[in-house]
Amino acid sequence: MTDVLLVGAEELENLGTRYLAAVLRQHGYSVQLAAFSTADDADAVVWQAKVTRPRLIGLSVIFQYRAPEFLALAASLRRALPKAHITLGGHFPTFAASELLRDFPVLDSVVRGEGEFTLLELVQKLDAPAAWGSILGLSFRQISKSANRQIANRYAGEIVENPPRPLVADLDALPFPARDTPPQHHLGVGYSPLVGSRGCHRDCTFCSIRSFYSSSRGKVQRFRSVPNLVDEMADLYHRFGVRFFVFNDDEWFPAGPARYERVAELEAELKRRRLDAIMSIKCRADDVEPDLFRRLLDMGVVRAYVGVESGSDHSLQTLNKHTTVAQNRRALEILHQVGMLADFGLIIFDPDSTVEDLRANLDFLREMGGTGLAPLSFGRMEVYAGTPVLERLQREGRLTGNYMAWNYTIPDPRVEMLWRLMIAAMRHRQYENQGLAKQCSIAYYELMMVKYLHAGRYDPALGEALRDLVARVNNHSLAIFEEMFDFTLHEDIRNSALVNAQAATWASRINLFDMEVEAELQNWREQVAQRLKR
Image (tube, rainbow, N blue to C red):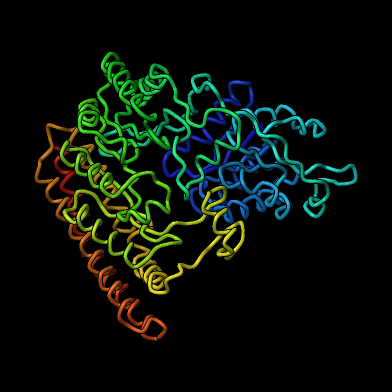
C-alpha cells in the first residue's frame, strides 16, 4: 500500500505534484506519481491506483478547462477505491472549493493555495477527521457519525472551509521537486522545467495568479536564493545531463532595479559552477532593456516569452497590463536586435473588444510576426475563477454558463462573429498540440538546441529556412484573418447559411495549406537530424 498517489498532467514534468511529493517523502511518506495528460490516460491512472492502493489520492488541476476530466477521473477512482481519501488542488479548486464539494460527492476535500504543508498535515491527520478543522488551507466535507464511506452518502456532512494557510515565506526551505523519471531528452539535449520564484507583482484582470497568492497571508511574489536555484540546476546538469532549463516562473523578474541585481548574481553563480546550458524565461514587456537582455543572452537565456497580450492600447487598459503598445513594440524589437528568440501571444478578443481594437491587433501581428521571427499565437480572453474580470462581468450581468465554465458575448456582433469564425476555422492550427502553430513553436526550440548546444554542426541556413516557413504560416493566418475581418464588416452575418459556408471554405483552405507545410517542416527536422549525425 502506498500512502499517497499524486495525479497531474505530464506533458513536461509537473513541478506542482513533484514539490508535493518531495515534501511528503521528506517526512517519511511513500508517494507515487501518475500522469493524466489527456482523458485517454484515465484507465492507466485507475489501474495504477488499484495496484498501489493509496490511502490518499491528490488530483492537481492546473487548467480549469480540464476540471471536468479530473472530476470524471475522481468518480472512476472512487468506484475503484471506495475508502481512499480524494482531494483536489490547484488554482481553480482554490476558488471553487465549496461549490466542488457541494456538487461532487466523490471529493473528500480541497487543498487551497500553496499545497505542500496543507497536504502534509492532511496526510498526518488522515485517520483523525475530527482534527481536520485545524488544518489551514483545507476545505472538506465534515463526516457525520451516521455517514459511511459509500458514494451514496457523501452528501452527508457540512462543508467546512478552514482559514487560509500563509504562503511559504522561504522557498529555499522546500526540498527540490522529486524527479521520479529522468528529464526528457531531444536532439541529444536534456531539458527540464524549473522555477526560481512564485507569484507575480502585477494584477492583470484576466489572470488568477495574483488572486491565488493574495488569498493567503504573505508576500505575493517570492524568490529562491540564487545559490539554491543553481544548486538544483547543477544537480540536474550533472545527474541527468540537462542543458536546457525552461523556467516556468509566472514572472521571472522582480520589480524595478532589483532585476539587475538578481541577473548579476545569477550570472556570477552560473559562471562559478561552469554550467554550459541555455535557458528560456517568461517576462513582461516593461522588463525588457537592451543592456539587460544582451547580458542575459551572453549567460545563456536564448528565449523569452513576453506577455505582450495586445496591440491595442484600449485593450491593454481592459487587461490592466500597465503597459502600452509602444512598450510592447519596443520590447520585441530589442529582443530581435540582441538576437534572442522573442515569443509572444495576443489576446485579440476580450469582453470590450471593438472593430478598432481588432484592426490594431492585426496590424501589430503583421508588424511583429510577418517576418517569421516567431510563430503567431492569438486567442480570446477566457474567464477563469478568481480573476478580476470574472467579478466585473458578474456585476455587469454579462456571464453565461456556471463556475465550471463561464462564457460571455462581445457586445459588437461583428467582433463576436469574427471570434466564432476564427475558432471554427483555425482551432486545429492554433490550439491543438499537433497543430502547425504549436509545431512551429517546437521547431524554434529545436533550432535553439542546435544553434547553442551543437554549435559546431549548426548551419545558419537552417535558421533561415525555418524563419521563411514560419513567415509563410504567419502570413497565411493573417491573410485568412483579414478576409474574415472584411466579411464581418461587409456581409450579412445574420445569414447562417452564408456564414457556415464561408467558415467551411476557410477551414478547408487552412487544412490544405497545413498539410503541405507540415511535410516541409518534417523535411526540415530530418535535415536537422542528419546534421547532428555527422
